[in-house]
Image (cartoon, rainbow, N blue to C red; front, side):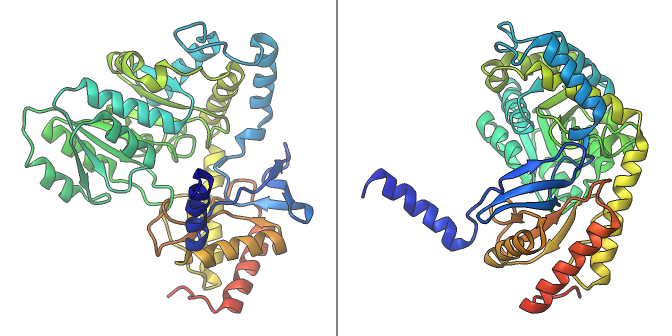
Length: 403
């Protein structure tokens, strides 16, 4: 058996299990989000995108685009190097200052993605804090899990959002040893929200650092869009807040915010920051404009929440198995990977509706789902067409309805 034969066998396993991933070849239309053109096997087709993480359509915001055009003419294309070797432009400095201000922290640090910011920060913190134990929510993102693993520190996994279990684990710890409690605010697959205030209280009681991933919340929650911690009034009590520029802010990149000395430590010890080319300044300038715009426009967040609530209501009225989440995430449960992909394929090919199937390992086996992310630009007609299409598929396949 050749190496390629081994690779082919691994791919065949994924296809047999129904979790082989197929990319949709899309052409987004600036100014017409969420409409796009799909380049499919039978040619081009106009579609509506229902699963984008560009939650507020900031990727087409004219203010953001203007800032990026200006930055392109000012700085050119790329950054030209790592942050340490010629790759720190004034655009990066301004963006880090804005992020620190957004979260009410002393400093911020940019990374090439949200995945990299979690992996780099958590691994560096675990190495620097000698004797630390990391307490991690069982549903934390893969980037957090990888960062904790790469840091080499002992870890304890607490049940999802279970404060009592976290306390139980901490009570068994050495009171003098350093501790990190790592968790998210909005969990992107189930759409539930962590009890941030309770976690803060537990951290104070046991002398632990708090590390919060706000990736699916920045831009979307709080008076200025700083996230759930701001909305819940505990932002100042969280030690380290991590976020992304690639979702609600409509750009690309990740970041952490916190004390100046903590940020300096990660800057100095994290290989994922030190040894990679910095973000293109045009991206940094666009992200800065997007953050400033969203801080000043809370009405976009209000509209976004209304659209999510409206879609949940319409799906429930049709008897479809929608999860009634407290966030903007709208999951519709399927429970089978092959069926989930087949539904997604039919919606795209027959109805011009694009939603990606969410299968293992993103979610546990048996909880496969379609994950809808309505934006302020998904109107009632789009929602009604979606519900009709799903109702037709559920009826034809005799799929389980909502209880």
